[in-house]
Length: 93
Image 1 (cartoon, helix red, strand yellow):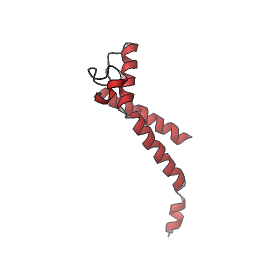
Image 2 (cartoon, helix red, strand yellow):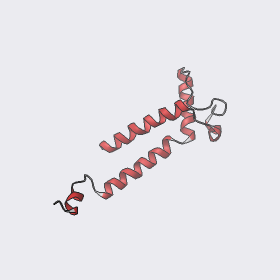
Image 3 (tube, rainbow, N blue to C red):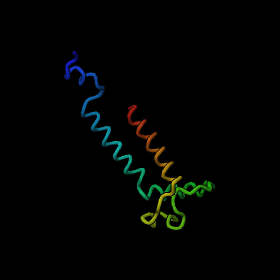
Image 4 (tube, rainbow, N blue to C red):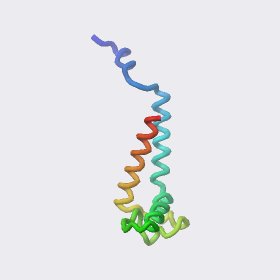
């Protein structure tokens, strides 16, 4: 029979490291999901010449009107992929 204390020790990472990882992930999520970031990436993509819109074009013409910016489905997917890659990068550090 395996004791509970033995099974708990088999888990990798300390509680402090897990907490720090969770806090960093929460901060990354806040940054990546911010409307100003959608507006910024929308402006960058439109200047590069991409036809795909990351946010509604009517309200995202500048960073000053970003509070009215609404992300599109493509924008949410792209930002989710970027968030996942950033979390993976943080987990490797």
